[in-house]
Length: 252
Image 1 (spheres, rainbow, N blue to C red):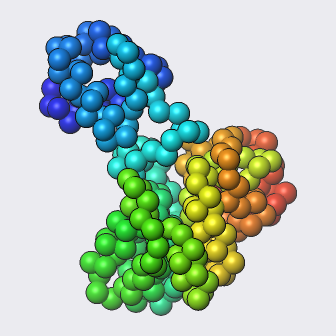
Image 2 (image 1 turned 90 degrees about the vertical axis):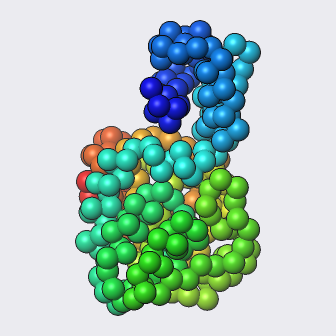
Image 3 (image 1 turned 60 degrees about the horizontal axis):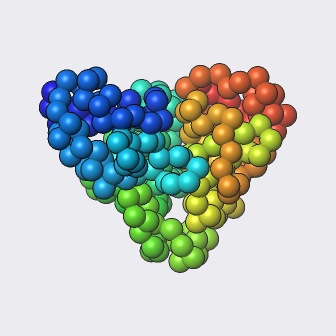
């Protein structure tokens, strides 16, 4: 098994079981303990897992932000499905806000084919991708770069956004809850989404079904602040009822 493939298998097993031993991984992946220990050390250094005595455990999403590279490789088909729907909201000569989420990055991969767009994003990878089309005007605000997130945040980022207005904004999140609304892990991320909401004509939430029913410490937006939510499957009934009551259009 190739090292890259083996590491992906290790991450998947840890996410499924929350904790695994070195001996379990050795038996499951048919490789030596020395190789497994090297893989675990590398994955911990990259921020994917946490080493423990005799094994490794999943990093609790409530206590540590996951690396951007990890999130980009999660829920891939769901994010592609969401991007396929979201792209229909975008046309030439529009101004667009995109946050730094992996969901918005999947959307940007389709947007790069559209000419005459004006885009502002705090996502470094997203800005780089869109700049490949010389007919797209891309703005990237100043601020602090968040480690492992490909994201720019901070007071100067918010100030930059407040001096612009977009026809439409696309954002994602960590959790979508019927009562608490839209929430995230970092205060700086919530501040940015609130700024987008204030300075755009329409705000669309891109949220795959793994976000449903989850709450994180910082509320980014209320359900009533969203115009449209695009997801990959019908939300649970309690959430669906709350979205209808908030007059949010749900597309999946």
